[in-house]
Length: 374
Image (cartoon, rainbow, N blue to C red):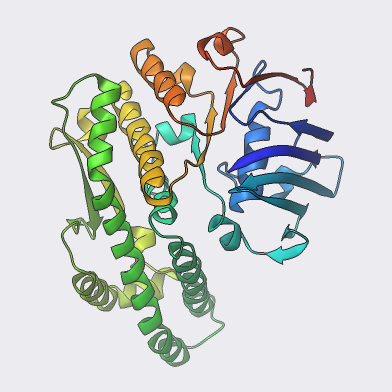
C-alpha cells in the first residue's frame, strides 16, 4: 500500500493543499502546533474510516467552514484507488473509486499502523486505550474481524439505547426486559466471538511480541506475556464456549445493575488487557521507558505478523514518537524502519532527524501554519 498523493480542503488548519509522497520515507518537520499530526490523521482517517485522536467531526473541520474534504490516491498490488471523504459536522461520506463505502469496507482493504505518544502511554492509561490497541490488531489477523467489530458495536448501541430508555422512563420494565431477552442471544454470540478473536490474536502474536521486545531492549532474556481479563479473571486459555458461558453468567448477575445504570456492564467493551514484564504487571512494576518499549514492541510485532500473514507491510505513521524514546530504543527503531520495505511517515520537531535515514527515496516537507514549505 502506497499513498501517492493527498489533498486536504478545510481540514483542521489546512485550507487547500495537494501533497505528493515518496513511496519510502516521508518526514514532516516543523514546530509544535503547525499541522504535522493533522496530515497523519487525514491519511489514517481516509484509509481506516476513524481518527486515532479524540474528537467529533466539528474538530476536523476548519473553524471558519461547515465542510471539509480529504482526497487520496493509493496504490496497492498494481491497483489504484481513489478515496474521497466528505465531512460535515453531522456526517461523513466516504467513497472508493466513486462508490459509497463504509469505514469497515476500507479497513478490510488498507492497512496502517500508527505510533503516537498516546499509544506509547497505553499501559498507564485506561483500559479503553489497551482495547483499542488490540482491536487494531484483530484486522491484521483476519479481515473479517472488521465486520465482527462493527456488528458488535451496533448491537451494543441498540442494547444501551434500550437500557437508557428504561432509566429515562421512556419504557416500562416489562417492555425493557422483553426487548433485552430478544436481543441478548445476539449480543452474547457477538460478544463471545469478539472476545475470543482478541484472545486468538494475542496468542498468535506472542512469538513476534517477545522477539520485538528482546530486539528493542537488547536483552534476549526479557519475557513478555499478556493476560486478558474478563471480570478480573484471566481468560487467555478460555475456549469460545467458556467465554460465552462466562459472559452469560455475568449478564444474569448484573441484570438489575444494568437496569439501574442504563448501560451495558458486561461484554468485550468492559474487558482489560494486562501486559506482564517478567510475570509482573507492567502498569505497576515497569518504568515509563519500559512501558513505552512494550507498546513499541507490540506494534512492531503487529507489523511483522502482517507481513507474514498477507505478504505485505502496512503503512507506518510515527507521530513524534522518536523524541519519546531514549537513544538506544530510538536507534533500534530506526534500524528496524530501514529493514522493512514499506512506506513510512514521520513527524518531528527535530530538523536534523532526516539525517538518520540513509535512504535514497526520502522526502522532507517543512510544515508551518498549515502550509507546505517544501
